[in-house]
Amino acid sequence: MWIYLVIFVFVLYYFCSKKEKMTSIKLVNYYAPWCGYSKSLLPVWAKLEKQYENNPNVMIKKVDCDKHSDEALKNNVTGYPTIILFKNNKKVKYQGDRSLYDLSSFVKRHQI
Image (cartoon, rainbow, N blue to C red; front, side, top):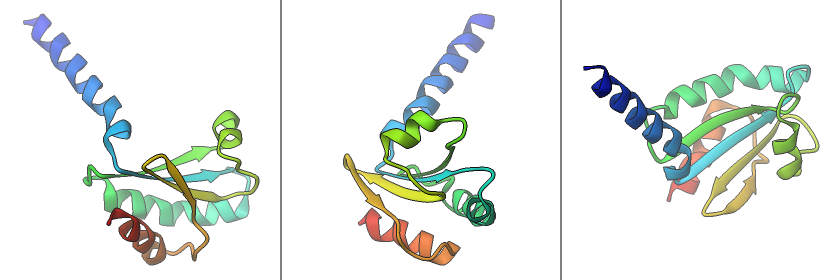
């Protein structure tokens, strides 16, 4: 009986870890927890994550640049917050308003 549980957990872990590779769009918020602009974006970002949580083609994530400075350097993040959309091995830096409507519209424009 326990072997079935082990297999189930392994399969679940495998597919959950592959979600990032299977999504067609990834929108990333590179933030610093001490930055006032980053702090003000976090509630909007949480709503955006909730809006797309069941969409397998879109991944909304945030990266704490104090903890993951290597990822910030790799993507040339020089200010906070920096929002970058990744699609088809291309990066698009978001320059618009930081409202839920505008961020969601940006994602929808790039889904096409």
